[in-house]
Length: 308
Image (cartoon, rainbow, N blue to C red; front, side, top):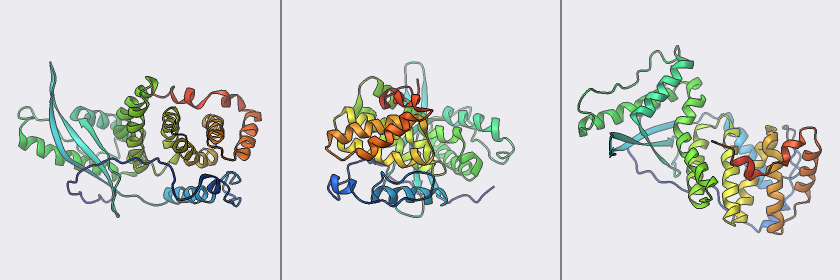
C-alpha cells in the first residue's frame, strides 16, 4: 500500500465559481494572439497563446502527482417521517499549497458502504488491508459515536486514495460527484439554469481534483456549464468555457463533442462579434469527415442525454 497522506485539520468549506469570463485583455485581441503549431496530436492553429498555455498546464498536470486530503469536519442528524440518519460533510483538499476552491458534499454511511461493496467487486485483493468502519448496533446518534465515525470515515477515504488503482476507478470518482451531477442535470433539463450552473461548477471543482489522470472526465461537465451560461445569456462566460474545453476535445479526439462544441463556439463568437473563421473552417472539416454525422446533434441535445 502506498504511503498515506497525513490527516488534515478541520476547516471551513467554501465553494467558488471556477468558470468565469477573462478580464485581463479585450476579447478580440486575445482571440487574435498567434499560436504556434505543436506536434502533440492536435491542431493549435485555432488556439490563442493563453489557450496553449492552459493546454500545456493540463498536460503537465497529468504527470504530476497530486496529493489530496480528505476531511469530514462535521455531521448532522437528518430526520424524516419514517427514518433518521446521519449525514457527513466531506471536503476534498489539495495538499502542498493553499486550496481556496473547496466544496462540501454530504454522504450517508450507506453511501460509504455502497462504495466499499463496489470496490470489493473489482479490487478485493488490493483492499485486503482496508477495513470499512462498522456500524454500531446502538448509540449511532450519540455525539461521541458520530465524532468517532467522522474520523474513521475520513481515514477510510485516505486509505482508499492511497491505492492508485482505486483512486482512478469509476466507483471512487462517482462517490464524490454522481449525486450532485445527477441533480444538476435534472435542474438543467427542467430549465432551472441558474441552480444547475451553481451545482455544475461545484461538481467541476471536485472532478478536477479527483481526475487529474484523465482530463476528458470533465468535458461533459464543461459542456453542460456552457449550455447553462448560454441559456442565461452570459455569452462571454459560455465562450470562455468552450475555449477551455476545446483543446482536450481535440487532443483526445472526443468526436461526440467536437462538432457540437465547435458549433456552439461559432454561434457564440458571432454573438460576441469575435473572429470565428478558423473555428468555422474546423467545424466544416469535422462535419465533412466520415464520422461527421455525430456532429449534427446540438451541444444542448448532447448534454441533456447525460444521467437520463
